[in-house]
Each structure stands twice: as C-alpha cells, then as structure tokens.
Image (spheres, rainbow, N blue to C red):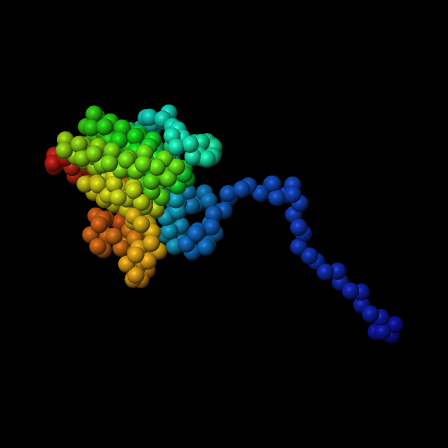
Amino acid sequence: MLKDLFTKPKAKKKKYAAIPSEAAKHDVPEGIMTKCPECKKIMYTKDLEKNLKVCLHCGHHLRMTAFERVESIIDEGTFQEFNESITSENPLGFPDYLEKLEKDKKNTKLNEAVLTGTGAINGNKVVVAIMDSHFRMGSMGSVVGEKIARAIEEAAKLEVPFIIFTASGGARMQEGVLSLMQMAKTSAALKMFSDKGGLIISVMTHPTTGGVSASFASLGDYNFAEPGALIGFAGRRVIEQTIREDLPDDFQTAEFLLEHGQLDAVIHRLEMKVKLTTVLEIHQQEGELSW
C-alpha cells in the first residue's frame, strides 16, 4: 500500500477526434443541409424545400430554379413548356461563350435563362415566363427576349393572362446590342397585348436589375415583388458616385420601391399562389380584362 502512494499513476491517453477517411466523407450525402445566406442558420434542405425555399428562421427568400417555381405556382400536371429548343449562338465571337452556355445547360437542365409555357393557377389558365438566375445569372440575351415575346404572343392567341417571374442581372454583354434590343422587342409585344385587353402580371424576384428592370419587368398591369428582392437599374455604387450622395440602407429593395409607389404589393412566397389566384378571378368576374 505504501508502494502505491509513491508510484506515479499511469498517464491517461488523450482522446482525439478521429479524422474521417475519404471513404467516410463520401458516405455523407451532399446537400443534406443548407445554410441561410441571411441569418447563417443551418436547416435540413428537405425542410427548406417544403417551405418553398423560405428560411425557417428569418423568412429570407432563397433563389429558386424555374422548375421549382413552376411546382410552387402552377397546378400539378398542367404545365406545358413551349419553345424549349431555341438556343443562343455566338454572333460576336465572344471567347468561351458557347462553352459557358453548355455548362449552364447541363447544370440547370434549361436551354436558356427563361422557361416559358402554359398552365393553370387554381384552375385559371395562363401563359407564364419564368426566369432562372442559375443560368448566366438570368441575363437577357437574344433568345431570352425572343422566348418572352413569343410567350406574350401565345397568351394573345389563347386569350389568357400573361405572368412573368423576373430574375436577372441585366442584359447579356456577350451579345452586345442584340441583347439590348430585346428591351424594345418585349416592351412592344406587351403593348400590343395590353391594347387587345390582355392582363399582364409581373412578379420581380431577387435580383431584377439592368435592362430587364427597365423594360418588361416593370410593364405589368400589376407589378409585384418578393420580400427583400433587389430591384433597380444601375448599381448602388455607381449611383452614389454619380449623385455624390449616400443612399438609404434599404435602397433598391422591394420594400423601398413599394413605399415610393413603384410596386403594387410585396408578396410572401408562401402566399403568392393565393394572391395571383385572387387577381385572376377578380378580372374574370368583372370582365374588365377578359383575358
């Protein structure tokens, strides 16, 4: 016993966290969790998707793909895509442009930055154009403008309302003036559609900027937006340097535009289908805009 008193106890082995092997890393499914870019909290991706990609903690609206937007708005089994085979060329010979387009086609399963088609919203037939910021940041090239113009013409032919969801960084620089002229083409198509009594609903999502915001995105009979969406033409820094003044913190947000009379409403994504249904049914009942 006395011997034990003067014997140093054996040092306990320190336990360290095991570093997972490469094989173990591959066993963990990618994309199972998503971090909110606004509040930085982490949630299950499946739960986020069930909530239409609206953060469960802070309500931030994360970006949706065009196909996710269809699922959230259009009645199941009613969407029919058209003009899906139209693709962009490289008229200005811009370096690596076609390769970048091919990469985006593979990643998004889209041929261009806008998805167009017919469908129904709680039984109300419509033509929709849905821009996808995952494809070249939703930039407006010649094909984007052409598809939107054709969608408007299809709505006129079918005598149904036209609804567009915008998400864009602006005109596509790789196509130069061919991109910029889409502002005039789409605006003219909307004017002709409106003159015939067509109902136009524009829903601006994050971000809607540049030539898109300055043309078809702002020409709806109803101009709506999702909460927190960035909406504007020139960038904040450019404007501040031009006017030599500091801009408000909420400048170019959907809420700022609503306060200054440039939007009719800011609508939460979970309420979007209900609100659109209300607008469509009001116009059908009153017969003011029969389409």
